[in-house]
Length: 241
Length: 285
Image 1: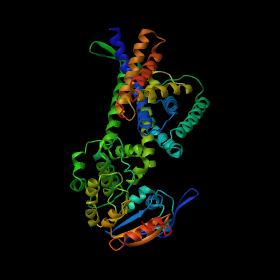
Image 2 (image 1 turned 90 degrees about the vertical axis):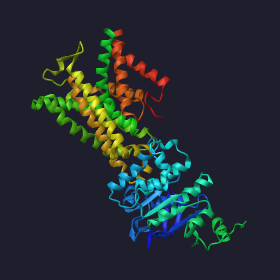
Image 3 (image 1 turned 180 degrees about the vertical axis):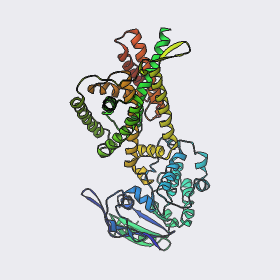
Image 4 (image 1 turned 90 degrees about the horizontal axis):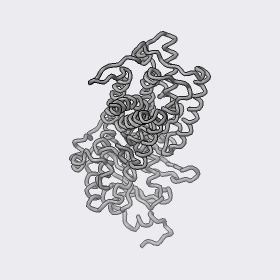
């Protein structure tokens, strides 16, 4: 069953149009990847869905209900959460306080779900060990785990992940991606923006490739070929290497 | 003995400064909003309190009971009507908006209350003293210090331990990321400013009990509050309390050296801290 879908999503920064009618959908427990070169509009797409950019209500639907342009804090209440680009943790606060903020708000907004601090500690044991440490003193991978944990504690139906592997060591990336199946097992739908095409293919069911604000290729991750991706990634006029 | 007395007087004076500084610690230290009308709000609340006392014949603590809720409402309104429109990474818009507000408030107060100095009749408590360990100290300054300590303790606990406190710290660290966790930053900020100005309700009563107030007096309170927060370190509530003590003690010792040197001594110590330890005594960054 489709949880989140976009319909002709158009977004602009002032006079600059960044998205030209993007249609993407994700079902309960499904993971889809959004790939594409820098500037293709992947992050803009996530920001538009999250209510951080102005879009028309009917352009984003959650279980069929129009929700586009809802303020971000209300979007969380409806069940959409994001692991933002650059992690965006609350500097000066401990790991535990960063996570507690999300628990507090989920509680306030009446969001129920299976994620607790204890379960998060099972998923990422280092977060328990570092509970009292200030987030600014963590390694990049540990910070990413806090950021993912914070989003999960909002008990999302749909989790948007913006380049969670960026700048991390391969071993840490594997550790983080190993957590995704458990997140999906909760019924949470995942939209992953990912630069690493191989990683995107292995971790998701379907792939959407974007180029210059449009979706240029869609297909099952296991079927789609490297050649197809390369063509969609760079546009038809470019040579495939 | 003379210097020990100066130290005690300084700590008691610091209690008064702490009452101004706490609201500033919350707004400037945590939320990073520069509120230039901070001192004028103390004066406005003092003058309202004095008028309430003379109109209804209320004692100082009845005035306090009325004034603190009024101050809370005023703070909430200030954030909703003015500051929420100018908050952001750039501190300049809030500085300009509140600078304008400061001038408007001063002129409004002149219009209503005239330039005369007034004070709140305390029914005798302003002249009572108590004996602690062989020295006599004024009852009122001790009460000021006790209230200041209690307010600092409560504010610190609220920031560290409550849902509201965590949401406020999160919104201050990264307002967009805070919204991504479901925080309604504008509502949180409105409550925080309500608390900051609410504390000024206490300060206003004590300020007008221990000395006189006139519409143009706000600037000095503003400077002391800024200095206390910066000496103590941004983001630390107990830092602002200690900063107030440092300021109070410096001034009291300065007054003993020369009656004209007191206020300047406080400013000099502030500049010294800024030069030697710009992050403040308890500053984290």
